[in-house]
Image 1 (tube, one colour):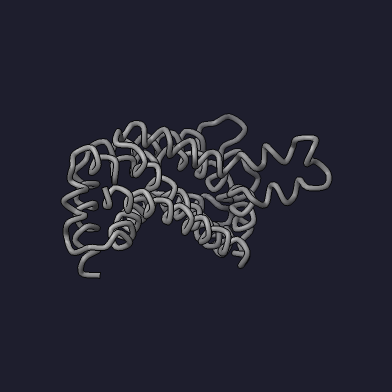
Image 2: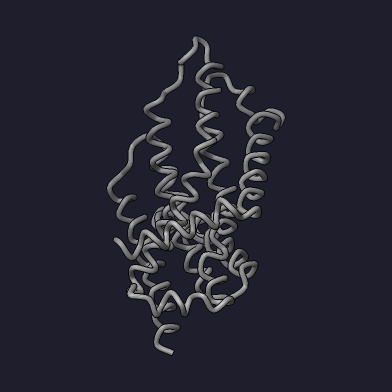
Length: 247
């Protein structure tokens, strides 16, 4: 833990001092706000009852762009600048380095999501009567969102490890996040799968499990699925960094 904390502290300091991260969050909340409050016929104010369902429908789509943007240089910049070699010669194992980078990325995204709680407060007071909102379902949906963030962060870390240009890491990260979120749903609609195998093809996708978790309950199968994906992408990242270390 003593080897991990300094790396996490360094990455958190980089986040708070990097204007690009702040701009990414501002753009994220501007777009989210426009979708939730100003989109004709589809905004929160157009609903018949107070609900955060629209928020939890839009956020995963925006996170496909935000999380790779916040993590695009977490390893790629280290590789390009040669500072990764300095980290690797320190008394820190490859696993410790990857865990530190992953945890720092996870903390950064979670910090970035804190302002979204203002939407909960707003909907709470807009409800008729005040407070007529299912806070239990909202809490469960936030837990599901956190599990989704865990996967997207692991994917973005892997993307940042395989290229040395942050912008390329951003593009690769967005592609992989979008693929795991939507690809299996789209594949399930193909005639070869439809009617017999479509459910099981959809089951392989993140969107299926996110929707299950959004119902207020967190199925054990979805937790296992998420943790398995996190492990797979962290293992790929470990393999990549280990190859760099052994050069």
